[in-house]
Length: 137
Image (cartoon, rainbow, N blue to C red; front, side):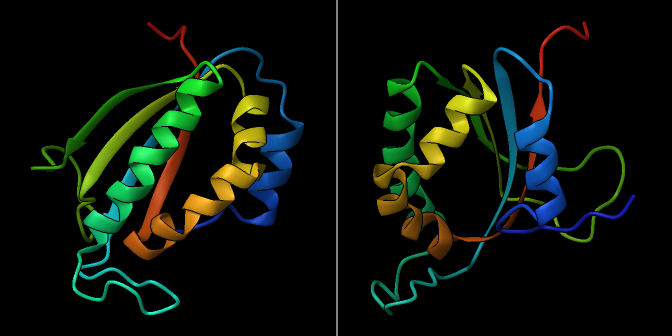
């Protein structure tokens, strides 16, 4: 299995996600890797860490998620990969529940989200974003 951290979904992923048949709540599992230092495009705050920049995003996006009926389920620092191997561990794992794919998509297209995304981009070196639905166990 190849693992590729990315910042945005590719065209095929967007097509599958927007045309898929998943109904109801989803939980997005976010595997996050931060820059050592924030990488703001306008050069601001060069002395803060990528994690600090992402925390700015996280504080605001959690309000947007809650406003649409979702919730932050879990966030924690990665301390060990116990089974398997990856070239580099992620820094944080965050799980976020959304009422639906549509709600998540609408949030990411909103002006409020667009205004805070600068902090996400400045903090994240890359991520995996995995959609899950309940019902397996």
